[in-house]
Length: 239
Image (cartoon, rainbow, N blue to C red; front, top):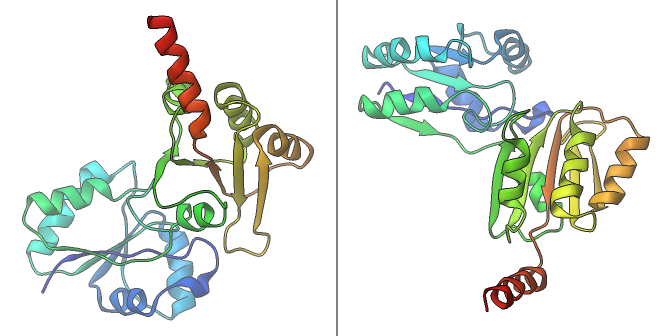
C-alpha cells in the first residue's frame, strides 16, 4: 500500500540507523531528502540505491502537493532530513499535513533525535519537559525567554555554535546566573561532550573553549521554592 514514511536518520554515528529504517529506505520508490548530498552519503554507506529528490524549507511549499499526488498514484515515499527525525526543527510538517488532509496514510518510524539523549543525560527531571527548538535569531528572542523564565519543566533549546555564548548570556540575564544548565554538543560523535553546572559556570567554560559542533542546551526548571516565593510576593503586593 502506498504511503508516506517518515524515517529518522542518525544524528552523528551512522550505526544508529535502525534495521526497520534500512528496510523502508530499500523498499521506497524514491526518497525525499533535505540535502541530497548528505543523504547520498548515508545511502552509499548502507548500500542502498534509490532515487533522491530535494525536499527542504525553501521548496516544501511548492513540492508538498506534488508528492502527495505521487503517493495517491501508488508510489511509496520516504522522507529523511540531514539528521534526526524529520519535522523536529527540520522540514516535514507541511508534507505530513498535506498528506493527512488528503487522506494519505503516514507512518513515522521511531528513531534518532538530539533532544532526548541531551535531556536524559542532563540529570534534570525528564518526565515532563518543554522543547523550544531554535530560538528566534533576532526579533522576539528575549521576549520568548522571558515567557519561559518561570517554567517549572526542563526546557530544551537547539543552538548553533556561533550563538551558544550569546544564548548562555541571555539565559543568565533572564533565568538567573545560578540556574542549572546542561549543554551537550556533537551527540553520538567522536568528540561528544556534555558540560553541566550553573549558567554562569557553563558560560565561562564556553568563553574559554570555542564552541564547535551541534549544540543542545537543557535548562533546569525554576525551583518550586523560587516560584512560591515569587507568587507570595505578588500576593502581598496585591494586598
